[in-house]
Image (cartoon, rainbow, N blue to C red; front, side, top):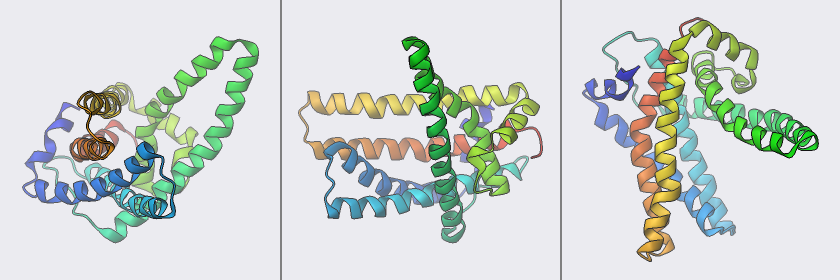
Length: 239
């Protein structure tokens, strides 16, 4: 699994491929961060958000394309080039599958949270802590299913995901641990570090938006390949 941090550099076209991904991701992050930080919900801002969402959709589609490509390769990995049509289809499936997870998972979460609060207030806190942990544990198998099988409902196929996790053994849990680090460290720097530094130096809001977007895009342009490798190699069984 440690190979996930270095394998991508052996592709002699890596910097060409990653630059395209970075460009799309940066546009997406700029639009999302602008809305998130300024709370500007004007028509122009929302139109920009839709454009940003489209670029993020393509970026997510490329990530799934990488998972599929790496799953089919055993060594000397060659990363896929950006394919607009395939990435759009993959990205749209990712969007729909995520939406279904939010709808069905959200209903289940609300029911469990309310029941826990009635039984004991501390149970409500436990439920809140368990939610991101559960999503992290299942996310590798969910993304694997979507990349390999292309199921629109991949993110709510809990039974299939559990079977994949059980049959993959400790390899899967090692991948989950590495994935947690890949997600957590950039998130803490982006959400806490950059705004704190900009606030201390009294930089304008625009600097915070650009700074967060740049850092998140640069980091993601590297970690997306780590994530793709972990998703592709954590599963030791067929669906």
